[in-house]
Image (tube, rainbow, N blue to C red; front, top):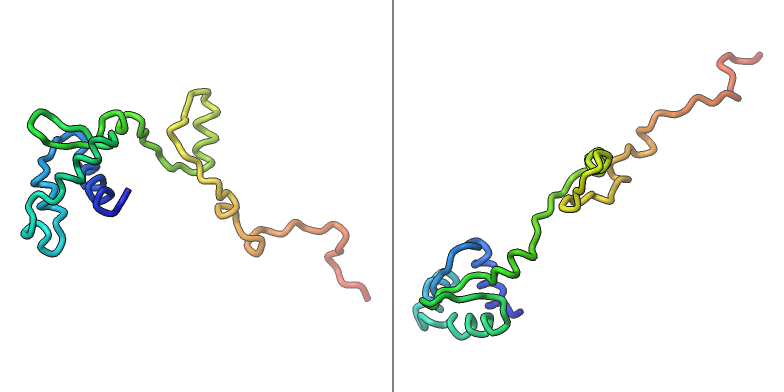
Length: 127
């Protein structure tokens, strides 16, 4: 995916359910007078993206991201590992949640951890 295709795809992701005209896409993404030089610069790129099945078009020639791609894309939520353990203990399926694997970062550093009392050291001083 080249830079123009990526820019178009990112712009259309903001409008997942709306068909947008090629001229409007060219106007919104036309950087530094590109739209003024050629008002339809995005049309050939959009046609290639439709052929690659990344975009779909309606009868008016407007474009949006292919609905098959949108259905495959599941929303995932980042949740702490402790919350994931609680949710999984309920017995339900929580596959759409992502657990942060960095549990070491959540624990206290060894400097801040309370020290266990050592039974071999006596509390009094010997003379």
